[in-house]
Length: 541
Figure 1 (cartoon, helix red, strand yellow):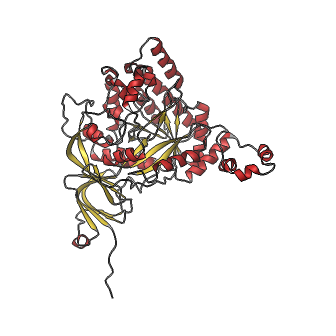
Figure 2 (spheres, helix red, strand yellow):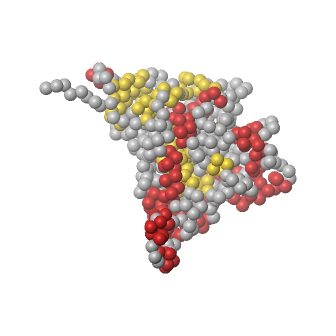
Figure 3 (cartoon, helix red, strand yellow):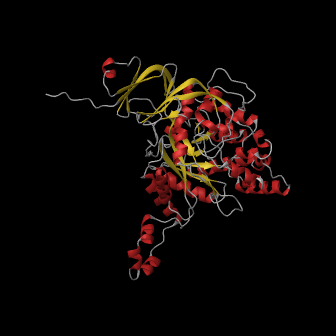
């Protein structure tokens, strides 16, 4: 009988410190056909290596993490500027943005798909699928940002009828349509949500401020009730829209038009009040929620009060709220425009309060638990606009600048540098705020495991246990790099972290068991696939 060739594709990661589930241990990992088969010490077997299909990756001196998950990005985003006819479009698409994320150790992103006014949730989802398909270099899922709760949201059947020319030509079709019982907004929303949940969407976003996207409190409450029926998670960007508008107008009336006026127009109280209000709406609807982009000490105080009363929810922050201060808005000329984001950068006491809270993270505890940190995730909220256009807009006034900060590529390295390295480089060019301390296990929880658990990806992602997908980041803590235009992979022409020295690099990144990154360089592009996420875990348990 002829010999049968073993066609199993194997990867063996050896000599690394495996960090998963709150535990750090020296161990090897065996991957077969895109899945983790074993994680144990001294796994290396000569018989496995002798097979031509086996690939050995030496992780000596490195940490082996579950692939990092960026829980909120805004690739291909559009910013609607008050008083301007056309939106400002990001030049950063799925091709460039996911390649940048992958190079930084991120194996999965969840991008925000914004529903256009009058568009169905399904159509918003379809648009994002079209944008990402065959372009994404890391895995991807979608939050759908709900911007309309009215009857303009069509059902699938109505959409088909509108586009079916044969039906429209039939005699009496128009009359029949007029007689058709109209679905209520609440029923339409639930139906839309049900269909997108069935297509792997487990979370939705709402905005309390923002041109063309903000919703009223009753609208948000309606969305919360619809989500509760499907055990979906609602993420909210919290700022008081009326006060933001008033304070922006006040600054402009006083001829304070430069970027330095941006944080004055959106003080911490504007964010804290909105967080308190959103949590009250969630409490009335009796549903767990997720708070996006926590930036201020005052906001954290509101979150702690809600935790104290036993409310079930999650919250996240971003590297720029942990590492950059509002002093950057006062850079010479209009250079401060590159740091404009919403909420704005804060002062050092705010940064220190967030850092201190993150140091309470218990990697072996469930995110959102009463005895765990009030901040569960560090995501990038990556959104990039052309800096030449931002600078041009800033010359009119700060409110004309499209808000957004890059971060997908350097999220992990920035946090690792600030929180996980023993020595902090105090060079003059470094602009990071004073460092804080995270263990590798805490770092893994915030960058991978917690987002996987909150957003319906665990245990297939965010874990190095047997059976998990082999999305793995092998992290070399000893490589130093200075961030600059020559190593940025996203589009937009700038980074707010330019000139900062970071320590740590993805030595290997595996996507479904395939090595896609070596030593911070992407060697396999467009290997990402859609993440079908499940609802109900762990928030509804």
